[in-house]
Amino acid sequence: MEVTRPHEVAGTLRSDVDKIFVNSIRHIIVHYHIFKNAGSTLRAILERNFGPHFASFDSAAYDQRIRPEQLIAYLRTNPNIAAISSHHLRPPVPQIKDIQFHEILILRDPLDRIRSMYDFYRRADTNKDPLTHEAKRLGIREFLTFVLETRPNLIINSQLNLVANGGAKIPEPADLTKAATVVKSAHVVGVAERFDTFALLAERYFRPFFPHLNFSYVPENVSPGRSDDLRARLNQFAAVCGQELYDRLWTGTELDRQLVQIAATECLQRAQNNSITEEDLRRFHRRVLVRKGASRIMYQTARIPRLCWRALGFVRRLAEPSASNYS
View 1 (cartoon, one colour):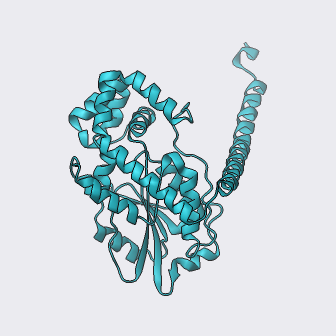
View 2 (view 1 turned 180 degrees about the horizontal axis):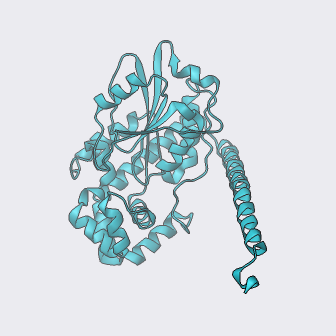
View 3 (view 1 turned 90 degrees about the vertical axis):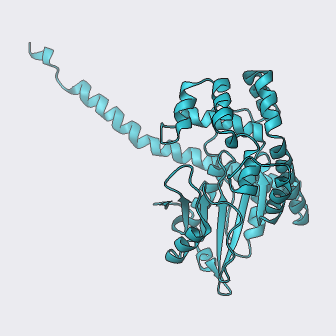
């Protein structure tokens, strides 16, 4: 099992640490990190807020699932953990009398997700996942055809597969009902295309347990040059794939699209029930802009010492006598 902890995180929750236990019940956030579903952004939010009380909890193997008993064993030996993000946990969480889990689930337009998967594999460092190697070797049409033929579970209604079956099989239409139940029972649910609505709803939901939780964010792990418009991205993706492959992908993600729509509807309904207004979203967006600006300033500030050392080294090299001066 691979568990990573942040070493140094600014803005860690203060009094909220004491709220890990409320009325003798331990409260733990569990984020199901579905690959390419804005999970890196959400993970960064949790890490920034919880600091040493946050952990990434993943299997050592990229394709291995974590069982509920493994989660329980880890939490028993780490009583200070209040938030977990995991690629390898699957809903639902176990029911334990002294722990209240709070599940977070984010879904994404399946075709846009497939495009993002290829972009990610192309720019990722080569690792144990063979798809990283294949993406660097193949163009997008060849790569997606290869995945459809060798690992169809990663494309054919893959989000429904993970939510309903834990990734165990190609889902059937009947699995949509099961997955819809999981989506609607998640404590915080949303879609990547409406991330601000999801984030503000999460703040409202967690307020009784972690009053200072701040879900403003800086987007993480975004494909370079990506358009902000989903329709434009899908049109570009269709043009790159060609009609035959795109139709094949469209047919193979029909149930995923239905599940994503269920999640989007559930998120918007909860936003209405919590009286989240357009003005609330505008205020939240301003907080996001402030955080993005602060992040850019911190990045540029961190670069200054490195640039100074490089400049100093250059000056020193210029000042040093070369061999030709003594010939």
